[in-house]
Each structure stands twice: as C-alpha cells, then as structure tokens.
Length: 72
Image (cartoon, rainbow, N blue to C red):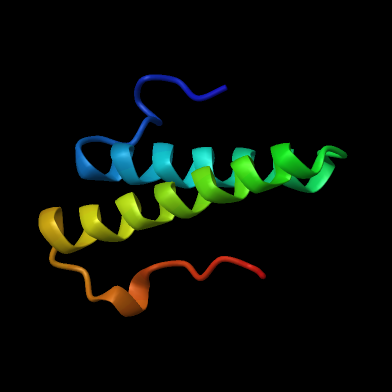
C-alpha cells in the first residue's frame, strides 16, 4: 500500500490509475472461463487503453512512443 508521499500527483496519478485498471481487467479476462465475460473484459480493456492514449495526447507533452505497449 502506498502512502500519501509516495502517491503520484496530477496527470501521473491518472495515468497510474488507468494503467492499474487496464492490468486488472486483463488479469480478469485471462482468468475468466465464460466467453461473454472474456469479450466484455476485452472491450473494457480496449476502451481504457483508448482513454489512456487520449489523456496522453491532451494532457502531457510526452510523445506516444512513451506509451507502454500492451502484451497481446
């Protein structure tokens, strides 16, 4: 568990939360045994990745080459 002094601030916090959410959804997708749930988790994961890229484009000066590529 992170303390307040260790928590990222501002846009770093949002990016950290999005990254964590994407990882959690991907983990749920991998462990799901129901086809419909796998499809739903995949859609949510893709949507969160789109939001993350859009956030990077709008709120940071980082080039897209710094976006962590998701494993296939």
